[in-house]
Length: 348
Image (cartoon, rainbow, N blue to C red; front, side, top):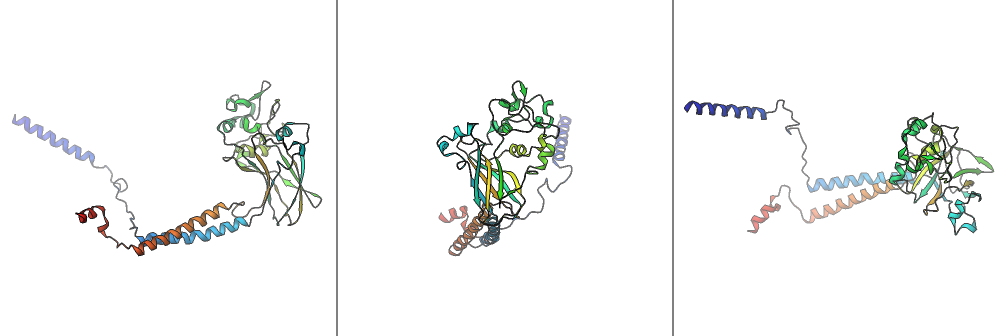
């Protein structure tokens, strides 16, 4: 019995030693042992006030610079979907846009307010047009854009995958609803050239739309959605299609139509010849033509500058508020009398 007790105590000690040994890490890492050097700043009222004040002092001038840069961009916006409808069809715009016998050509005159330095970017803007609808976004076949008719599975295109028993290239609702309004410009009695090449992303032309795939059986059904494509030109050169198929996340968006590579003088009369073909009247949408320049900050957008100014102003106001509170109700650093448990003890 004594031998059994000794052996059991010995085995218990060995087991405990093995357990202690197993808990010890094989390799000591300061990261796993949470033993890395760390900075634990004491967030005193003075430090907080200083941080808010410095942030505000930095953000305010940055916001003013961004806002000034945005205001220096010249932009001209022309809504034409209502102006380019004959008077007799103003009460029934849908009938006008669906009647193929009516000419959709329109001419508008614009007087330039300010000088616009080249390049001048030409955009079309659509409002209340939901390209971000889930079924609309999924109605396309990226593999077909690369492989053409060799791609047999185009079920993702849903209702626009075939027509008259033959597959459609490119298939899907996005390509089917291609924007097809056109714009041309005259100035000083002469035609203004609009460069329509390189308006799409180079990565899209090189990797998403093949140079060996051509439009096939496109817009051949009785229900026409938008623009047509030249079957003799490969998809990689249909830049209007490439721009259109990069869908927008918001119901109001702009897409690049072309670039004017000539300066436009202030006071010049610009004549716009356009074809009002695209149907946005069913959904109550709006169509606009936009001419704009750009600078180091990009196109005209006041949001960035205003957000910097608003953030900087709020930080300065908070710094002043915290400073007044600190002056009126000072609290010495490391004063433990304000701790909750000390307050309970003093109350007793």
